[in-house]
Amino acid sequence: MAKKIQSIRGMNDLLPSESALWQYLEQTVANVLGRYGYQEIRFPIVEQTELFKRSIGEVTDIVEKEMYTFADRNDESITLRPEGTACCVRACLQHGLLDNQQVQRLWYAGPMFRYEKPQKGRLRQFHQIGVESFGMASADIDAEMIILTARLWQQLGVSDALTLELNSIGSLEARAAYKEALVAYLSARVDQLDEDSVKRLGTNPLRILDSKSASTQALLNDAPSLTDYLDEQSKQDFAELTGLLDAAGISYRINPRLVRGLDYYNKTVFEWVTDKLGAQGTVCAGGRYDGLVEQLGGKPVPGIGFAMGVERLCLLSEATDNIPTSITAGPDVYVVVAGDKAKLAAVALAEQLRSELPNLKLITHCGGGSFKSQFKKADKSGAAIALVLGDDEAEQGLVNIKWLRAEKEQQTLAQSAVSALLSSELAAELS
RNA sequence: GUGGGCGUAGCUCAGUCGGUAGAGCGCAGGAUUGUGAUUCCUGUGGUCGUGGGUUCGAUCCCCAUCGUCCACCCCA
Image (cartoon, rainbow, N blue to C red; front, side, top):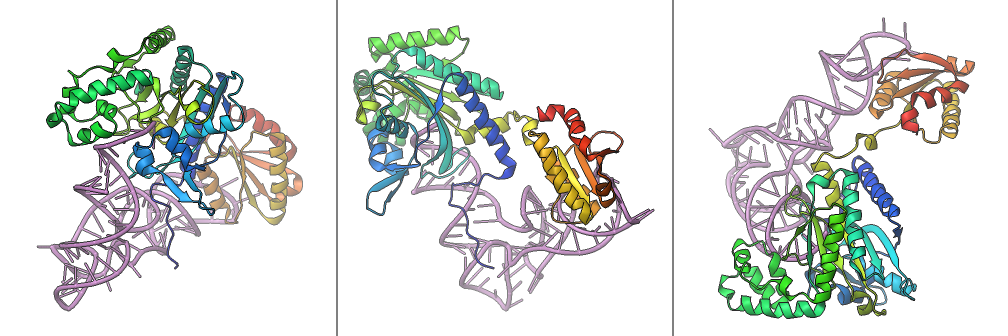
């Protein structure tokens, strides 16, 4: 035997046993987004490397060590997208979607790539559903996005497992001032900092705020607070946001130490987190990025967005036992045949039924085998009903209806009468 | 990139204090002719992740390597 080729580490196959859950999640998300007036946008998986360097930030881990970057055949540096926001902005700019005070509500879904060591809830190719809006500077759109996600969790039945963490990281200027104060405070106490945080002091001091080290967290209790450094506008907007969330009945936890990893965020940042997924508890996160469009070559256009990790959502649905049984249902009907004439009749009947009942899921047995084995497969398929055709029935235009789950007598019907029977028997499934 | 656990049939796992392996599930066939899920019988199925080393002999010991899982880092 030839050597087997394996998938790339951290890039998983999605098998039939899981695809139904994915379809259900994706459809539910698309449906909720549609109800809020968001439209889908699609863009390529590969972009010029420069796009991510300029948006995410040169010194972030993503850009420094996690990007899949290659030389294209013309030696241009290209990168498998590590996130969607930058791509979305690029596409909008390229096609003039943000010109002339236009407002956009957009979403996208698809794979993202980051060269990390895989673990629970983290893969090298993972999938996000992202939502972005442009052209609205006020906090009402911030609230809308959060409210929308809350509805989504409710729809999916995972609300109880998620809590909303909220913060404002202020304007660029406010944050710079705060950064200085924080660095001053921590620099005087370097000896008390954990090793990782000492490194971050030089590179990305704000990240120290959400350090997992207990001693560092204790040290931060007396550190200057980001909240005290917020600019007036950010304070006002944050107050409006919380007011709107209160009005919508959405509870949240203000976490003054919540900062986000990507450089382009400002003002509102939020995360939906769970304790059910181990170390990767963030299922959905985002924030405002008012400077990004300009940074990527557009006129100043405010934006806000978030992304959810589809794998994490799947894990959460499983962990909380919130997968509707209906989504994994097999076919409604399985057709069993014996004899050559019956085979011909069965194909004709199956096609007739598929035409008459567009929502019917019907499998015609293929591949031969004894009657007995065909029934075994019919049973295993999960079908509620087996249609049984032998040569005798075929010649007389008849077919046997056998219920595989219910306690009902098998009956023989004219083939022409089957669709009527199925549509009443399977009314719930076919609706 | 760092650390730890694990790699035995399609799946879940057992096992040999070193003498080339087993269960359950699954799959296939059968238990009267054209009727499944229960039960019974039979069968299919593994160079014990890969490569070295020690040994008369290794799946079991040692080393390396790859894969996988979990955690750190970081993030959805």
